[in-house]
Length: 342
Image (cartoon, rainbow, N blue to C red; front, side, top):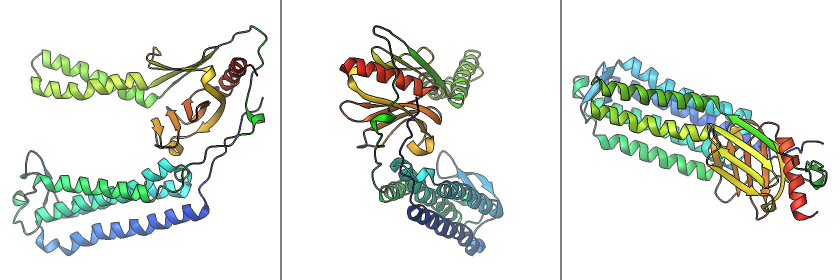
């Protein structure tokens, strides 16, 4: 039994070359702007400068002119280098959704870096000391809104062609031979260690906060705020950090969480075919439930590697991270053939 080879559309040398060229030129321009503008205004800026505001327009934190310049350029440089490296590798440009994210972060991230440095310089401009640098809250909100809009527009314009569904010859479909009346079950359990760690940290935080509040060490308001953040993250992590996939005579069952509840079931009669496929987070746009509207393809990504993929009889695909996915697909195809009478 051979594993079907997924047919993917690798990024053409032209599209990847264009993305790399745009990222390189754009990154240099943004870096130059982040460095040149503060240097040009240095005589009109206090040193140290106000760099943090909270609870209003009055500053409560400062940094030297040089420190602010280095931090602004360094933060953008990290974003730029990461995106440029992803473009050079090419995998992030294969799928439409990853392309949307890549172009969105390239221009949206630059807009945010330039905008935040711009409002910081504007607040400090001609101020005698950093304590006189006032920053209206709506300036930051405007930067976030404009950079998000720029990222969304860049992602839309750079989305490229729709993903082409892989075409697999019937001979590539793995199938397990079952004797008449024979029943078998295949089960896979996959966990994401990073999500488990985040879940554990969130639940531990909730326990500590509750204990401190009970002892009177932590104010009730602060405790409720901390619990409002940590508890939902912990519960969501419990439900999504582990996936249990089961194939039996009834079809495919995907259970969430350590107890496999809740679960999503797809009857064998509603499935056209199944196969194993290697997928990575960069190809589908990240971890979790990933999809592109209109594509009909949904991936439950917990980790890169083997995935069990089904094509529904009514159209569309569903993939889930699973170990030994080829065996599960072969058994599922056997039950599909039995259900259809073929």
